[in-house]
Image (cartoon, rainbow, N blue to C red; front, side):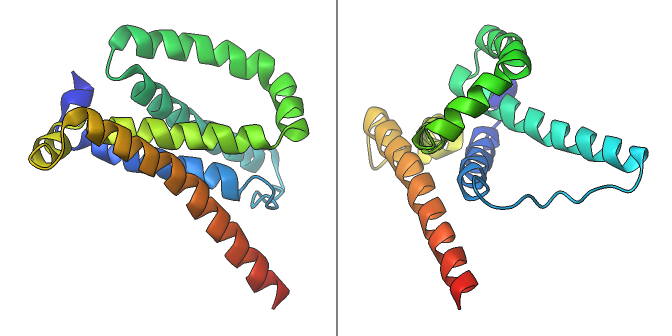
Length: 164
């Protein structure tokens, strides 16, 4: 099992935290994507953006599936049509209810904490100090609140820097 590799879940967990924070801090920020002067440049930009978003999607699904190959496959098969056909609806819902973006990012932080707690090395080390259920809940709460607080502070600092 790939997710059984020591520290892979821990690394994926940290990456998932970064994805969640980036989701929030880029929420209302102007895009860094520059207009490309030719078709090839535009195609390459789309391919790169798609690859990054796909990686984020795979990491989030693998974390939520907790290593179950069936759930990972099910999640990927389910998410592709949702993203393709539901993107317009989802975009309108997120524009109308921006709190959903924050809730989704907090959920990614929660899943990241669960993923970190289920890493073999992290769990073995911390089990000397705390039982597994408390570890999972603690790391999940830290992940969810850490995402929201980090994004809030980053946005606040950016706003202050822009006003000075």
